[in-house]
Image 1: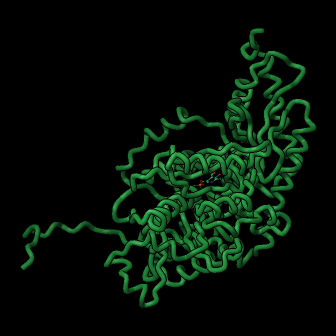
Image 2 (image 1 turned 135 degrees about the vertical axis):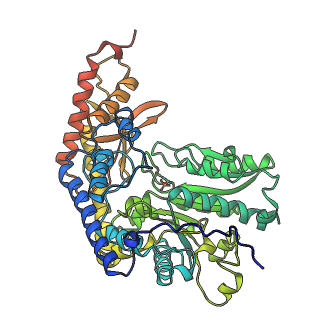
Image 3 (image 1 turned 45 degrees about the vertical axis):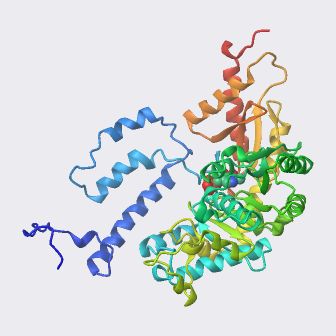
Length: 507
Ligand SMILES: Cc1ncc(COP(=O)(O)O)c(C=O)c1O
């Protein structure tokens, strides 16, 4: 006999079901009206915003948030959206404007936004067939398509929240497959082995590889940084000698991460050569193509990814170079069987016999359980816009980057660090006729001043320990006039600041 918690039934609160998204006419009407109000606000954002950033700083914005008590009586949606305009929309960084060329944020294509509308309304969860049905098949078909573009005959994989999660999966599979196959040690059951396992990546690889090693109990020192050549590509001679040194110390080289499109320089490691080295030492090859993945779409530049088919796994960030909304990313493997290393079964969700009965479940291959149906956005984009147009968008951004590199090189106020490979350029304001200037502080301050004014947004990075500026060009609607204007703004700020005594160095 079950005991009830209390004998006295609690007084039931009146609930207002009009907020619930449902089949009822009242709900459908509210959905249309409220989504219409939200759309108006988004259109206002597009119409009103002329510069990528308002320049607002946390101290200016925080007081408006401090005034809000989330326990207050609720407000009509119009008022909530007006409030949101002041709190967020008026200051949100506008990636759709061509003078935003800071980080790897792309403007998005409309089929992707249509996908967001449908996927959030239907709210499928892509962990199991019984929570998604056709959604699972859409994700699987897109993974298959991506694997085909890479050159994996029978590949498999899963959509992830981003490149960081995809790179984590790569390090996880490297670790677990090595331990299982070469040490005969089951990490899933026993935890991390005592042997020192090492991963190799270029000094310019993304920090998520080190972070993954730390998360996976290998320690971030397990990632050996290999120096790059003058084109910012991994030096394969140094890779091989580092592997040999690792072996001579009694440690175990388990995998290499080749970066196809480094975050700062857009450089692509020599994948073919790295693949040969990885094969020679029976190591896992992961290609982090979070940035360069868009090359798969390009007739003109796809050859830059030659050798990617040698990889055991690949990271592709559709939310970077496929113009998809955040988040939309994939982790793809050549051998589908390796994914069983991360399969866990729960009676309530994905019992083992369900697979035997032919039900496809993405949760068997994923670190996530509940999982967004991000695949729908790419599906609608490929079906409605097509691979060729999408590739043309990406090609355009590469030619714009080349144009920007030429402009910087021709300019007497700037020095360019890297040759234009994909979408990133590292450079700085530096006028040769001025001597004894602290260019480091000056360039840091130029970027800060531009950030306060918001007319354009550029990024900052370090090259050989010094402060530089960075363009990441991902907007195909950008023109040479935009580039000229941005360089003009940077030069103007540089010339104004250089007059100040504080940038003069003592002799
Ligand atoms: C080369 C590279 N890999 C991985 C990542 C991480 O991707 P995400 O931000 O989607 O997690 C980035 C992000 O910039 C990147 O540049």
